[in-house]
Length: 164
Ligand code: MG
Image (cartoon, rainbow, N blue to C red; front, side, top):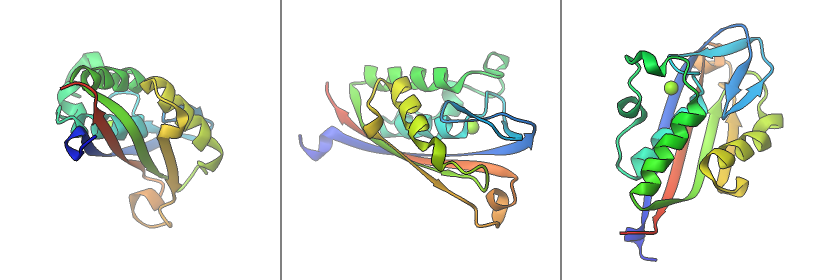
């Protein structure tokens, strides 16, 4: 494969934390006393992944596909949104090589959940868990992450072309 057969994309997202759990990150429900606030189910990691995949295929972004002004997207399952985006990406002739993701959360400790998150993301994408890297960072007690105000996520995605 030559280099024109590959595309890289980046995604980033932030959601505010609100009182009361549970927390949903990467399609996995985590026991915690706060939840992420947003128009959809606010799954910050799935949103970053969705944008990375759409970006790699130059198919726009999650806000264009699912405008937050549309009541139809209220409380929407981010797994369904990610699958919809991946269908677009695949229809354009691309297949996933891998994702590398970082979740920035002061709490909860995400290490015990990383394997489950990788498996769930892979399941949504029809991929293998070893195609999905999940890393977790704290906010070192500074900034919106460190002050427990928000959780953020970043993702890079690599695609390869299987059809012109
Ligand atoms: Mg979002």
